[in-house]
Length: 446
Image (cartoon, rainbow, N blue to C red; front, side, top):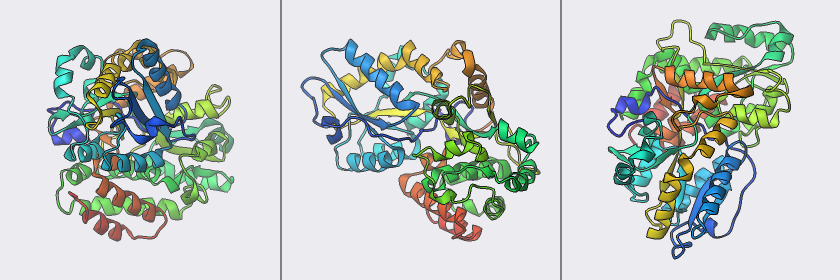
C-alpha cells in the first residue's frame, strides 16, 4: 500500500487497494512444515509456508506452490493452512519461539513491525533493488504496509480489496425499499426489515474484527481520517476526540435498535455463517471485505450469478466530516521470509517471489476469484460475470482520498488485542462509550 518513503499519514491513508484475509474452514497439509522453517529442508533448499485456509484464497495459494514445485524439481515449498484466528495465534507463537515457517503470510503493519523489532524477518530492500523487474510488476501503493523504518520486509502479494456494504437485491425488492444512500437511510431501513422478520445486517460478532469494520467506517464518516491517524502516530489521548464518543454512541444505538442479526455475538466469520445469512435472505445487508464476493460466489449457489448481490461504498453520515470516497481495509497480503531459515531456504523463497508470485497465472487466479490483484495491468482481465464487481472495487480503491489500513493490522499486537476486546464489549453493551475511550487511550503507543 505504501512506498518506503511515504509519510506517516500515508501509512494510514492510501489511495489504492486493500485486501482482507478471508478466514475460512479446513486445515491443510501437515508434516515438516508444521515445525516451522528454521531447519526443515535446508540442504535441499526447501521452504515451509504457512497461510490461511478456505475459499477463495487457499486453492490459488496451493496452485502457485504447485506451479513452483513443478518448475523447480530440486526445491520444494510445503504449505500448511490454518483458519484465520488460529493462524494469528500459531504464527505469533512460532515466531516467538524462533520456529517460524520459511514463508510468513500476513497483513503487514503493526504485526510486521513487531517481527522486525525482534529481528525475525529478512530485510528485502536490497534484494528488491537488485530485482527491479519484480518490484515494477507490483502496484507501488501496496508496498507501504510491508515497509518498516523505510525498509521493505514483506512482499505485497495476492489482492487489493476494500471493505464495502453488500446487500441482497431480492430482499430489498421483497420489502419494497431502495439501497441506502446515507446513514439516515440505513436507520430508516432497520425497522422496515425487522417488521418483515429479516435481519437488517448480518454480523459474525464472535470474530471481533468483523465488528471492527463497522467502527472503521463509522469513525471515518463521522470524524474523517485524522483521529485514527493521531492514534497511529502515538498521540496521547487521541481517542478522546468528541467525534469518537458520538460514533461509539451511534454504534451502540444500532445494537439496541436490533440492526444486527439476533445472536450475532456467537456467530463466527471462520464458519462463513455471516455470508450465508445474506445470500439466503435471512439478512438484508452486510459490511464486509470485497473478498466476500468470492465466498458468496463459491458457496451461495446461483445467488451471485443471478444478480442477487449488490454492493456499494459505505454511505456518508449526515453532517459527518469524512470524505464519502474514503474506504478502509488491508492494503494487500504480505509474505516475509524468516531470518531463522537457512540460506538455501531463503533463496528458494526469493525465487518463488521473483517467478511464480508475479506470473500471469497468479494474476489470473486472483481475478477469477473475484479479487483485484496487487499486480499491475490487471484491468484487461476484468471480463465475464465478475467484470462489474472488479471494476467497481478497483474504482473504490483507486478513487479513495483516504484508504485506511485495518486498525488491528496497523496497530501493534498489544494495542490491537485491547482494541478487539473492547470492540466486542462495545457491541455487547458491556462498556460505555466513555469507558471504551478510556481503555483505548491507555494503550496508545504501546
